[in-house]
Length: 205
Length: 251
Image 1: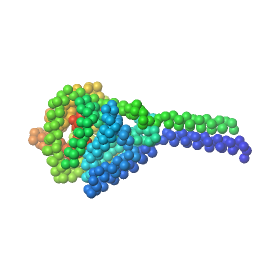
Image 2 (image 1 turned 135 degrees about the vertical axis):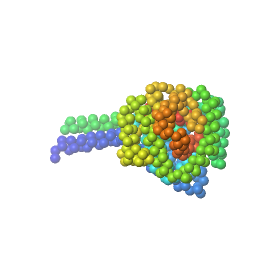
Image 3 (image 1 turned 45 degrees about the vertical axis):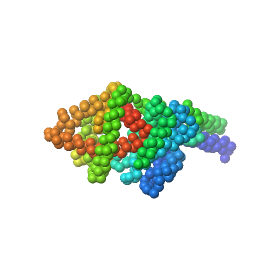
Image 4 (image 1 turned 120 degrees about the vertical axis):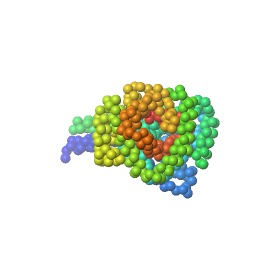
């Protein structure tokens, strides 16, 4: 075999590798979709276990640990609070984050506790921009079909992370933002923490 | 020979450029300006609805909330126990099928002729093979699903604004536009007057009551989750309504 043929072969290999490598970057977002699917399955396992012995706090910790892999809660809460975020001091930021998480989880743990295991069907991810995608899904819950979409952003050092969830097309982050905006028009961060605590004790009863 | 090396170098460079541009597509978490960029994803998350009657609306909202929690919710739980899920689904399908004229008119009013045709196919299949509409054969066997249209959406597609937000006693959120659309729908609906095919007014009322009661379980569960997890349930429901309708109109 002569030199030129060897070189040509190597060149082709390099070229093939390079093209393969570049096309990897432009993959069809199967990876974040699969990651999300397995996270949601794990979540349903915990929600549906219906272990009455497990306290709310224990269940919440399990759920948060599962969701933390694909959900950036810090960003979700900051975006929901929007410009009001800076009206809170560091201790308040931490407290509000914990209280809101509890409030939301409590309501949905209750709703998902009974009935048959929800069935989820996912559709192909939609590209929103070069760094954002939306993964639509249909959840069948007690015979009702609910459209749930997850919005993910490709975050530096974190990879694909959920930053918003849409229920029947309603953005949860925008929905909470409207509520926070109205709250802060007349009231303060101290009032907010007070209100959240009150709501949590009410829902316990 | 040289050409093949050139080609290899070119593709390597191309790949590097590709990946470099991809790397720039990450969003830096620490950069709040960039986090803010995530906000304005689409029109619907910023959907607005005027609420000049907020005081009155809030009182009706409080009244409805009381009725839901103390009358509808206990009643619904009893209904769910008494009527198994497949039967409820069947009743739901039956009434859904009867509302075909309303959806057809809404599609035609928006010049959505493909959807009007699909709706007609769905109505024909479900009325026959689906045993008078109790089974949604079009969906289960023919994979035929059509996004639901109503008269309010048609008004929205014509560019008519909500007007303002209203809460209707017992029923819940609506807007002037969607409320007027509801009246339009009643004109076409085969159960309600004036185009009713049911002569006896008591039968008519009973049928409408069954339709409403049957829809309650799914609404009540979601309603409870939304209001319990909200900071201000009134604002949460109003914004949910505005976003939901904006998306429906845009589809």
